[in-house]
Amino acid sequence: MSSAVRWLAVAAVAIGLVAFPYWSAAWESSRFATTVLRDMLVFAIFALSLDILVGHAGLPSLGHAAFFGGGAYAAGIASQRLGTDQLPVTLGAAVLVAGVLALVIGMLVVRSEGIFFLMLTLALAQIVFAIAFQWTAVTGGSNGLAGVSRPTLMGTDLSAPDRMYVLVALTFLGVCLLVWSLMRSPYGRALTGVRENERRMRALGYDTARLKLSAFVVAGMIAGVAGALSAYSQRFVSPGDAGIGTSVQAFVMVLIGGAGTILGPVLGAGVVMYIQRVLSSAIPVSETVLGLVFIVFVLLAREGIVGLGRAAYARARAR
Amino acid sequence: MSPELLFQQALNGLSFGALLFILAAGLSLVFGMMDVVNLAHGAFYMLGAYVALSVVQLTGSFWLALVAAPIALGALGLLLEPLLLRRLRGRHLDQVLLTIGVSLVIVDQIGLLWGREVRSLPFPPGLDGSVALIGGVYPVYRLFVIVFGIALAAAIAVIYRRTKLGMLIRAGVEDAEMLGALGVNTDRLFAITFAVGAALAGLAGVIAAPVFGLQPGMDVDALLYSLVVVVVGGLGTLGGAVAGSVLVGPVDTFGKVLFQEFALAVIFAIVALVLLFKPTGLLGRIRIAR
Image 1 (cartoon, helix red, strand yellow):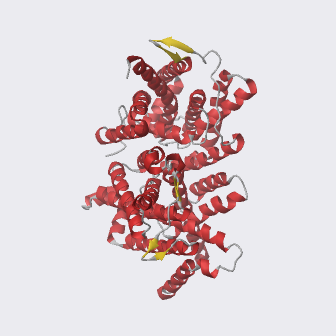
Image 2 (cartoon, each protein chain N blue to C red):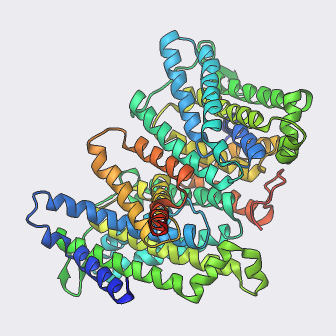
Image 3 (spheres, one colour):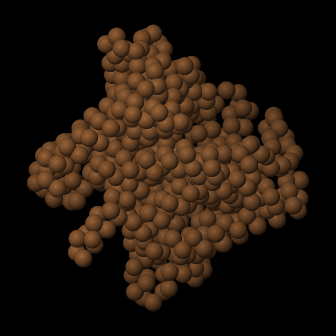
């Protein structure tokens, strides 16, 4: 495929994605499909942000929900306390809070790696959950934060389901483009270098701790965007949004889809959300199915769906 | 805080610390031997508590449950290690990821089999009362937990120092590969280690159930506390598990009395300080941060 054709195909898919509620309007299940697709895209953004750490920088974070939840609470609390539904204000609050949280936690964790990084992110992120769960006066405690208002942007009210969906879809495309260009930049190459051989990168004069910390903060800020979109979509923030379950969910998405790619986390988010939102209404053991699928991928297909696709493509070409 | 209350809270802290030791000992043992942080440890703990609930409902005997649940969990561990972890020998991070999947499956199945509402396990007869202690009354069961924790630590120490299995475990923690080269069947040793770790988690689940009850989410709490204990105390050593639980138990208990809403922040501060100034943990040998 020539690159021009490829770009045209990507653009066609992107337009089709954004316009989904409009061209599917005639379907009987259009409303439901739009809601599920919206939530898939929110989690795709979240998974993409986690993959900056897991796939690109080689930092297996099991505490990424701290920033998703932090962003969700920040957007919700900002809109309620400041009495505004301006998108730049509430989204800005989400990015800021998630970024600061990521900076604080990041400073403690970037000095460790591998299994230890995983343990520390898990433990420290749980503090954010505990604050969300226990600080009832601000966060609503175990009841969560209800009645989050949907945003307006430059006088346009985005509260209708279709408009909310378009906001999510456009943000999703923006994040895809951002992560894609970031990972192709010299900065992204340096991150890959840290993943492959941190010692050599240090010998080459890179400040690897700072590289890792910056990746942690960028990933945290994007997770905060996903959290804010989740808060607008659901009109609700639950302490579970910052909990270990959400962190595991994102990690499973990245691994099942294929770490270190753009398509992987997106496909992974699709598969996981399908199991949890669609399959769960048909069979009561959706979490078990999710766990088993995850185990099978870790055992047999560590490169995820994207890796399986690549292998199949290579076999077809070799024949 | 009055002296009586202080004394009571100190006992509560010790009792919680003893429970934390039972819980963290298994996690630390598995890590020391296999370099795997078993993230299903909390799920094993939860399963132990629910198995105990069923045994008590069927037979009425807490003591039978205290034996049966660890055996059941040990059998599960003996099954899971060769079935899953052994296939990824040497790929430690992937082995850790496997345990996430195991945990998802176990917790979902518990919800399906036993339901998702809060359950409770009665105190065992004879330990359900209180005794007069320094100007107040104190529940006997909590004293029993302290004694049980100390006895278990002593028993593990004796097994470590005086038995063939203990010798193999110490050697395996030191260098499992070398142990294999010397002709020891490390496959079998790893399976046994994982099973013992699971059994200890199950044991902790039974011991904790009368105090904390049984509910969804107990697996996460158990996992987090055991992670904090081994990070603070030091990974992979028995002494580390003891030191971590003796510190974290009382600090958490007093933190909850003094700061209420922000008790976890106190624990967080300890973890952060340990990471900054003593990256091996108090008594560990493995650096977890530079």
